[in-house]
Image (cartoon, rainbow over all chains, first blue to last red; front, side, top):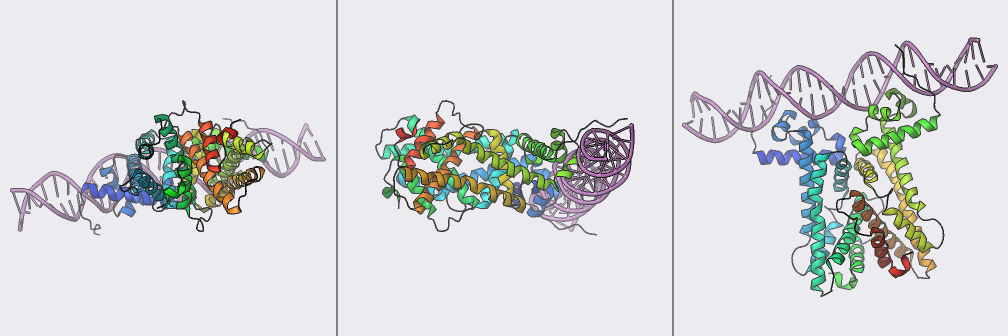
Length: 209
Length: 209
DNA sequence: ACAGCAATTAATCAAGTGTATAATTTGAAA
DNA sequence: TTTCAAATTATACACTTGATTAATTGCTGT
């Protein structure tokens, strides 16, 4: 009997593949379905190999969470581009309510992770690190919009606006991603843009590009 | 050797206790920690007993989800009371951003469940049933507010407002429940009320009771 | 008081889990 | 071509999981 053929891969590639397989497993089978065997099978390797690249399964899952949150934040931020702050904000909003940021797969993975944060200190740390980034991004953007429009706004005002905007975007993202209602007939991008404009005291007409 | 003493309980009581134990386990240990043994231990019974009241562990978890969502919706709706639609809406908002609706335990359970909806058809059904209730509640309330204020609003307008309001409340609920930032210095109730008022085109001053 | 049934426990099982380790293969260096 | 460390596989182990079943207990009606 002969062993299955294999070939060496750089550490970075194997880690990336294992993390991708982990996220796929979680999305399709839930967190409970992301077993060592399932993940290794999807990554095209043998279960034992995982432990060469990650100390624990726990570490693998935590690494997958970090990657996931970073990718998600980047995907949202990628909608910003450059230009005036107002149009960057519009880009962020548009990206937040459309795929690939807003879709069922993303929500499933996110929820599975959030559900563990309370009981798993390792996950809690990974969470705290990654989640602040999005909040900071929005707060900075709101501040720039205010100065750009020469609106006097105290740091407290900006912070309040950022909290509310972040909440609205999170909520819209969840509603769209869950897909319970059919939003097909609705232009969710316009709804999001108009709502944000209203909250910031901006004429919605200025906000549509 | 003697067996442990026990006493009979009505079916409804045992089911309620088992569901409560399930939710406690999920909140404190995550969904993976809600094992048959852990749940039965917390409920003060033996693992085998679960199967007399629930066909599967899957059914138990799904039943726990139904109970959880129903209680959550009721807790939020309980803030409404009666009176003018505007003050009922304010009550709903206040309840949504304060404990026990908005707290870490609730969020953990919610997220754990949502993370399974995509991969578990039984959970998906339980989800779809329960989640519509909150949306309908908000939509009805928005409609009543509009007629009360004699503002002309088409069903589409009301629906749009309900979607946005629901998203904002969901998002604020999540942010507060996650507790990453310290909102201790901020009056989140006022922030929520002001934001909703702005979105509905109502003078925020009218909204504070 | 007691008979009988339903409720509950205790013990067990097969399957699946994460982990550990020895045996094997690969690929690059000499 | 040969060598040899590193990467990968295969196998095994101890443990936990959900489920099953027989034995026992509590309770209610008579």
